[in-house]
Image 1: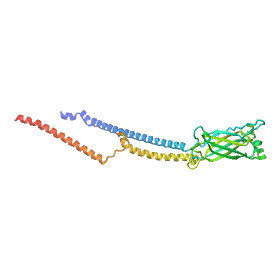
Image 2: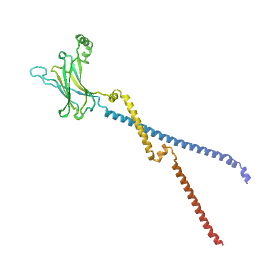
Image 3: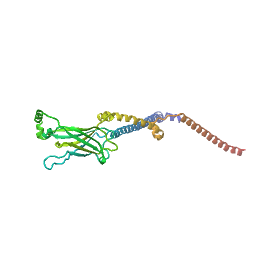
Length: 331
């Protein structure tokens, strides 16, 4: 029977062909599955690390940008404050014209301060004056200004002379001929714009900040279309560089903030890494065995061996106790 069994073709096929093929297929499948699981695990770890790196880089970059923007808004004042100037005067009762100097009250702000302390400002009055015969014959005239705080407290005052530009008859004729299409179309006017600089380096008083401005033209014959007051910050040092080179200063400021913020983030990461959950430790920090861990592991192995030896001794003792009563009964 045994010979027939071994010579059975079905047995031979099953033992030497089918089973080896099945074993080989199962082995290949298990190997492929293990590689796939390992690759999936590696991809997950890679995705986790890339996500954390992108998150940290984004947070550091935006933090640096917000820090520079906040510093710029705090450190840099408004470049120019422009206020319209509406002149008033007392008209004459018995003849045409004005019988007082044109004056104007210009409120800078309703708050306590609009100008940054210890920041120089240029303050100038811009006058649009027609090229009329009266203004040509006017000659020089004085423009005065007073900077006052709340309650009428005088902070500073200044007076400057002004005069419209002289133009000869030939110059006026040629200019009128060339610009006549603009004059006829209403796109330009025969006027001059006078810019009278009243303060070159005005600095506001922190104790009594300027809130009101009083302007006066010390001439009863000056003819003015319109006027405006310009308060322009006069930058020096770092403010001058940040105002005139905004892109370079922004790149330098953001890069400096990026360096320090990255340094703080890295120190914080290594400091807080000991308090992270085990999941993040296993994902983002390689396990390093220390001498203490090895000692602890060896101690655990010894304890396990001792426990197993004690367990074996107890079982042997119980077996001997069961055998002794049987021998006593036989005797």
